[in-house]
Image (cartoon, rainbow, N blue to C red; front, side):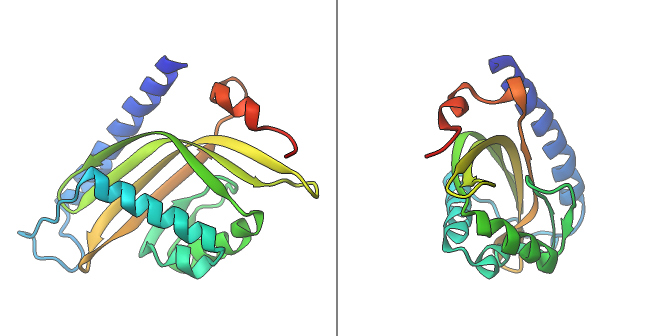
Length: 178
């Protein structure tokens, strides 16, 4: 299990490095080429907590406002990529009906010039498909933040559920009815 998590983090870091290099080779939106906004890991954790708080409101506009206009979302509960804030809002309008509550099980944060990533594993509890039930979904996520127009926004986010033997051992305890 630990080796699969390490492989996941290594692969995710490699992908992030490529994405960051491509991103950093282009001028940041609204910033002169010489301006470099650097953040801290604590600030990225705060941005992730702000996203979780927006989910808790149940308001898709609150969640969508945290994404860049041209952001890409590869969501957990859908195989359809959502490109742009309006498409992301439409996804959350449906997803929030399941009253998601998340817990980050592990994370790795990398910060750079005008870019930061938060990559890890989570457990989400959602309203079940049968009335009166809740279900737990364990998965992986990656969030890429970019500093644009004076603020940090989500430029790319990916979440995928883990299946079968890949699920964290603690997840089995969360399954079933509450």
